[in-house]
Image (cartoon, rainbow, N blue to C red):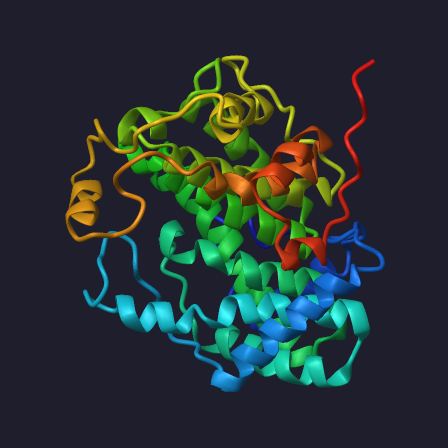
Amino acid sequence: MQAYFSLQGSFALRKSSLFILLMIGVIYSAQAASWCNADPAPTAAIQALQRDVDKRLAETSQPRAIARLHTEGTLPHQGIWDQSIEAKKDFPLIRNLALLWRANKDQRVLNQLAPILDAWATIYQPSFNPIDETDFDTIIDAFALIQADLPQATRDKVAALLHRFATGYLDQMQHYSKPGKNTWINNWQSHRIKIATMSAAALGDQRLLDAARWQFIKQLNQNLHPDGTSIDFEERDALHYVVYNLEPLVRAAMAANTMGQDWLTLRADNGVTLTVAIDWLVPYASGEKTHQEYVNTTVKFDLQRRDAGVPGFTGQWEPKSSDQLFWLASTLDARYQPLAQSLRKQLSWMAACWQIPAAQPAQ
């Protein structure tokens, strides 16, 4: 069967919607690797998720889906910032419901989750702004976990949305990147790669994953120096943006791992790996080193947020803000688990998904 996109072309979809849905059906049924490995999920984590879900559903059980999200580059009450923050309340609910379904197969959970997923897949129109859309990783997680159990119509809609994310972001990175413009080499690009890679892996699409892998290696080479420092740190003078740049790359590597690929140790032309970049941050996260945030930032918006009193844009960096990064990295390399544990207890949604083996002592 002829492919409906080309890795050398523009990833243009064929016009036949039936053809697209048939092809997507082939793609997402092909995934064999498990997205989560906690089996069974810890009881305490499931109980915590249930409490969180009950609290969120008590606020409203109706989907908050809107056609567009936009918070990037804006402050509270500007533009559609408030509406976007309200709509994003659905995202942790979606993932938590999916994790509950995985743990207990309670039909009531699926009945709560499916309409919310259906609403987002029907209403939302991708903007391909990776900062606005990075939290769609929750929907990708949910789809990867429960796709086989969703109603057929909902499954097709969500699969089509993920396919649009993957092809759209890969198309941007392949054809529309502007050399020298920071948003094509800084954390923005890392978030593009995350969304594209997670979508490709959730769909089980090897061709899209191969294209994402090429972009991942390219990003290592253009974003990181051989010692692991990032251009985000140079530009922002903030460890917050080191974390914000590395987290999406780790999530991309985790998604690739479900397809049997090791991206944690992939080496770029300049010799750097994702492991090297994470290791660069370790002395700061452990407290061995400290850093005053944004003192020499070159980005005016950082100063605007500082002046507006947005938390975290002045003072010393808080190591605990990197806890999620190190817990996620621990799923790929257990060496990071002791540091993650020292920063904060593993969040319930992560504990319900990933069982992290204890780090092996050095030989």
